[in-house]
Length: 374
Image (cartoon, rainbow, N blue to C red; front, side, top):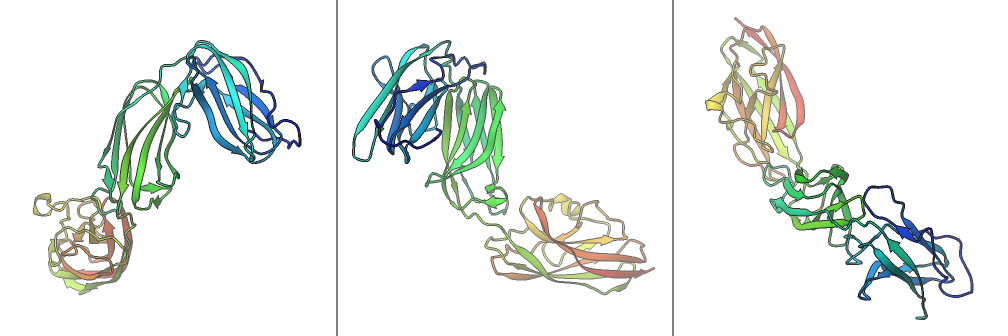
């Protein structure tokens, strides 16, 4: 809808003027839309519709406010809205249709204008979004590794442009996927609760997958998605110490690390628990039969070294859990040991706070040189 110059006096609504009287919404993309132009002499509420074969009103617009007098136009691509408040559109079958614009001003005065439009070669076969599934249908995106993401699957039956978004209860739209061309078949994607690196607030949302074909048919499928406990975790290493700093080959280095949970999310942790002793030739992924492999979202403290062998090839190969899940505001001291069995006269040890498969919250903290005699 385009507003132009203001108009004073005269009838509330002018005659309709169209850029063409015939349109062919074939879906081949070679048919320009029809512009239906009119003029208001004063502010009014507008409805525009085509009249179907049974006299039914096939709305293009309904009860839309035009707050100033002036020139306006409606873009008609051959489709109407089955529900004027909804997002779906249907291309009309070939035929001749009256198009009507109704205007009602603030005093209740009503005026209508109409003309005739003809449709040829209409593609009325709609696209489809079938078997839309959200798993799970309730997520808690707090990066604890449990129900942080939703997996979305659906099936489409026609080449179409697909848009994915969420709608809040107040009607605000959050775009997840912008107008992606998709072939018929099975499709899947996932979402982690973030829009532009910002978590969406907890609440209930309509998850919408919308498909539009080249002719102008639009269909939408939707499911309710609940978001609960949406929050970003936060934590840091308060202190790091390594002792002793001069050892004989085969002796232990004691690692003492204090962690504080400064966020609003429980930090889930896994073993080995505090007190575990590593050989310098081991790593967390190899001990106890691989029991303590990375688990996404779990937290551990870790130790790595420079000028050394880098035993397992993993970053922070020596890792310890907190011994429990760390509550918001809680602190814990983690003590562990490394038996130095590699012949390096001097290495640098440092610590990190690891949220596995997510990020390193603190990296290369407390660098300390350890000298080994042999």
